[in-house]
Image 1: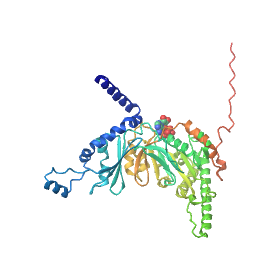
Image 2: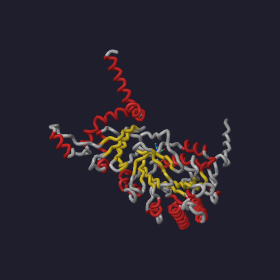
Image 3: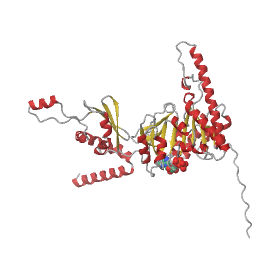
Image 4: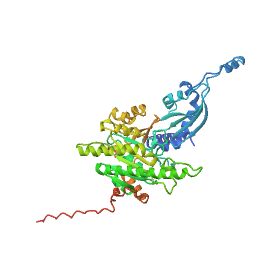
Length: 453
Ligand SMILES: Nc1ncnc2c1ncn2[C@@H]1O[C@H](COP(=O)(O)OP(=O)(O)OP(=O)(O)O)[C@@H](O)[C@H]1O
């Protein structure tokens, strides 16, 4: 092969890599990027750590030994690399800290590490005392969300989005029973909810929906819903029926507790999950779309209805967890401006997801009480990234996430496939949705043709 042919091939390979990087960053990362990044980190590691102030000076003993043996003074030492693991979207670097180093310094230096190693993002966490894990992403994984092919699915731990560090974001109902999903119009709330329903459809769970936008979001998914309300009057009745169901589940738990108490060494359960399987009522996920519609009123009758609705919702979020009733509320704003009881309700919704909002006040409604840092991140979500959101929880942590784009057709197909899993909820039978296929379809008579001359 001549030198010219060789140079030509190299040029073609470089151009192909650059095109791939631009058009298909995930493929680029898996084919070329990961190797280049590993080489870059190994080569630059010591100097980057030094420049970021993440090294420790040589000990007195080493300095004395060097002086005594007439050798050059030893260098500052960076943390030891315990492991470098490539992932689908980046790299994980596990470091053993040197004596005197603090995990906080690494968390504070993530931005410097990001550009020094030419990665897209770096986050840091202390995995155990003296060991820090740097998670790096090689490209913008939220630009085009692709969930991993193999996702761990167990019980009510639902993979709902991708995090900016390339990990899957789960909505875990047993860990965080109730959640709030906020966002301005066209920010991606409905797609998030749709994806959640698509994933929940395959689980052993009863779905109950309230969608006061005349059911436009949830009615097409009705095959997998055990109960559905598309107006505030039905919603009030449905919520009260759900509160009654919760009380009945508590009766089942109490009965079981009395039996267990008489059996030596038997575990005594305090919630639905400790009941024997044959006695355990199916858990329920209640999805409320556009919650403001339930809280607004314009006359005394509507005010009374609002009180019933808010009271029932507050009961469900305060007491529902042990009875296996989980609440997922979705809306544009959710603060004191919606009236009495709303902030009390919000305090119980410890899972928070906020899509793009129009102002800081809305971001504060989502996070001010649990994670003030997340407020700023929420106000920075760009308009051209619908579906991107900030997710936080009551521990004060937060992360950027984005749901895979899910069409209504995909969600409807999932609900149809799993329609046989839809349980009949005792006490809520009258709220069963009328299924489109079963409902009589009125075909308008063809208009009479005007007589032609
Ligand atoms: N995860 C996503 N990935 C890509 N595009 C998205 C995503 N989520 C939403 N979009 C885009 O944004 C549009 C609006 O999304 P969506 O209907 O979910 O907004 P919304 O907040 O529910 O709005 P509204 O309150 O008006 O109903 C969608 O039609 C879609 O084009």
